[in-house]
Structures are given as structure tokens and as C-alpha cells.
Image 1 (cartoon, rainbow, N blue to C red):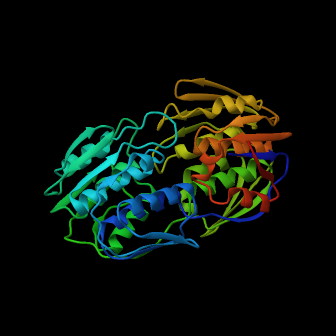
Image 2 (cartoon, rainbow, N blue to C red):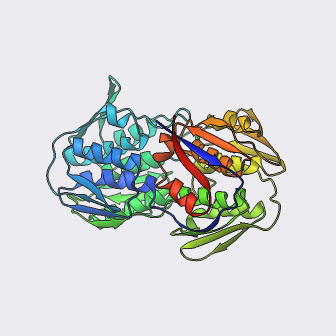
Image 3 (cartoon, rainbow, N blue to C red):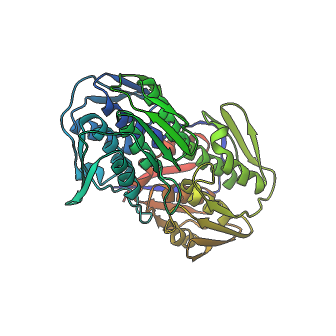
Length: 420
């Protein structure tokens, strides 16, 4: 097993290109289960999670290969409706095969999902939405067992205790496109990744309106055909690189990024004193002087993303003053706090709040990644710290960031791998 070594203190400068969005490509790959025709997906990041989803598609009977950013899911019928624990337990997003399996085969047996340890993430909204479409669902031996001889459109509300659910919206939408009649999803997730999925389904012949808003309307069709589709840029990778520029007092031009998807992040960085230069497909980030502390509250899109919380905490750790970070999506998503404190940060946890007292500098230290975004936050802290930082369990990082070491090295970072 490898660990990541970072020798901090280098101002990052140059240009970097953002990869395709992990959180968009996974449900889009699941959606290829809805047709017997060939689908071609472009702009795909080569990630551990992408390859896990390809393994799941193959286990279900599809032929799917990734080559130079393009995935071709071959035509052909499949009959396997069981998504095995060994694969689904490693990645929560794989649970979104449930909806397309129900839509296509009218039955599914999908393991309860795994993934990052960031707090309780129940599947109750998935089950609620699919039951509204006429699905009989039970939990047996750690699997969701679902049958639906006659899926019918329905009007449903998918809001939960912490807002809308991206994966639940995806699952219900993919099941509803082949249901009879009209489905209306209230409190649907508005994330760009949901919109990217809906656009793909529309190319396949689905009838969907309102995606990108809290109310999605779906008119069921009898069948879907193959399609070719491109993946949107990864807004979380882009946000991470934006903070990399600021936390190192650098100057980075970030290409292949949609500024419209970064509204809440850009707003907070500008409030902190960053200079952000926007074009249609790029962002340039640099600080205009000493940054100011800002308060952050994570919310469903278009609010500040929970997937940027750890990275923002690293930035606030070296921003003099007091900032308060409130986590309203996953209240227990603070496992990176103790690791940042090992590097000299001053962070106090109080329930869903983290009170950050900025320090002049962090010190390199051995730390351990607990989840995907926490690992990104530790990389950022390592880039800013004095001395060497050694990050263990970097397989978390590989799940969501394509070639991140190479990208950072090209910007001047001193970063490399060593064996544990």
C-alpha cells in the first residue's frame, strides 16, 4: 500500500485541466442498463470508482471498457439482476443500479451500499420513491430485494431530514422513465450531475422536464435506445484546485470548468479575499493579500457543497481569525479535524459545527485519510505546511481524483509516493 509524501511551502503556478465528474459518470453508466443498444460515454475519468462501476456492469451481463476517456457499453441483453455485496459495498454510488434494473428487468437485488465513512447515509428516500412507483421492496440479508411487475408513474415528495438526495433522485428518475404514465418528483436534487444524467436519458428517448429544478416531471416511454454523451467537468476537483492556488499563495489557471457550477464556492472565496477571474470554461485563482476568515454552511446545491467542506477547513486553518463551518448534510463528516490538528491546526468540534482558529502555518506530520474529501483536505494542508506530510490510506483519493499527483507536480508541488 502506498502513502503520499508532500513537501510543502511551494507556491503553485501554471495551468491545469479538470477531469470529468465522478459523481456524474457513475449514474450515467448505471443508466446504460436501461437499453439493449450500444452507448458511448465520453470525457470519463479513470478512477477507482469508475472501474468499480464497470465491474458491476460486467457482473450484470454488459460488455463495458474504458479507453482513453471513452467508455463503450456494448449492445446486448442481460438477465442478471443481482448487484453483489463485494462490489457495491466499496462504493455508495453503485446503489444507483437499483432504479435501472427495476425499470428494465422489473426486479433487482442490490446490496446495501458502502463507500466513505462520513456518517449515516440511509437509503430510505430511494425506497420511498421506488415504492411510490409500485415496487415491492424488502431488506433481506443486507440486500434490497425489489420487484415491480407494473411500474406506474406517481407524484412524490423526496425531501429528507438533510434536504434532497442526489442518488435517490437518480434512482427514481431512472426507474420512472420506463414506467407507465407521469411521474412528478418534488424536492428533487438540483445538482449539475442530476441534470447531466437527465440529459443522457433524454438522448436515449426519455421524456423529462424540470431537471435542474426542485420539481422534475417524467412521462414514461416503452423503451430507450442507445446514445452518445459527454460528462461534465468535475466541480469538486475544480473547487479543490481553486483552494490549492489560494492555500499556497499561488496563481493557477483552471481549465475545463463551468463557473456556473461553482457559484457558492466562488462566493465564499471572494468573500475571503480571493481574486477570481472567470471565462466560459476556465477560472484563474490568486489571493489579493492576506485572506479573511469566512463562515461556511453546507447545503444541497446550489448551496455550498458538503464535498468541499474539508478542503475549505484546510484553507481556514491557515487564515488568521475565527471561522465557523457548519455541516448540514452529513453532521458527522468531521473525521479530518483530528488529522488537521496533528498538523498544528486549532479546530474545535461542537456537534455539527467546527470552530476554526486560523494559525500562521501548519507543520508537516504523518496523517491518515478517512474518506475521499478528507484526503483532499489533507493534501491541501500538506501543500501549505512547513516540512513533510505523509498521508496514509490514499486509496480514498484515487476514488475521486484522476492523476492528482501529476497535476499538482506540473504546478510545481513537491509530491510523490512511497511504500507504507
